[in-house]
Length: 105
Image 1 (cartoon, one colour):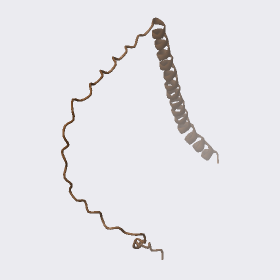
Image 2: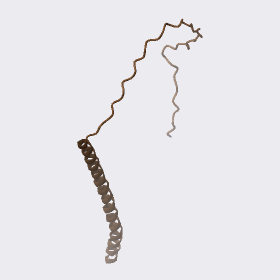
Image 3: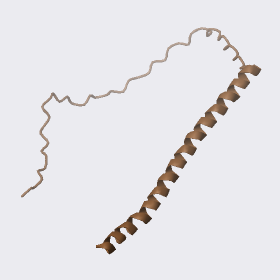
Image 4: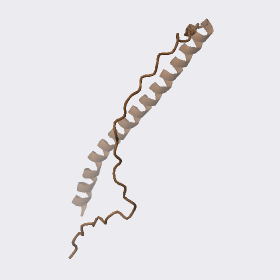
């Protein structure tokens, strides 16, 4: 009744170009120029100096990040625990309600 049909691959309709032939080339040696230009030394890197206020700000910011992330993770764990407990209660109560209803009839 329903039979899959194999797709046919039509021939390409665009212009087909043959692959290009790459011929090896010779490398010509150029005469060496006079003395190279002097190289300027790279500027020395500046060291980062933290002031006591910057250290306090970094420690305070890091502490705030840790507290926020911790609160989010604890709340997610609490949500999972509450959901699991409610499902366990439902798994115990629903069968007893069904059997109690069946005994009355």
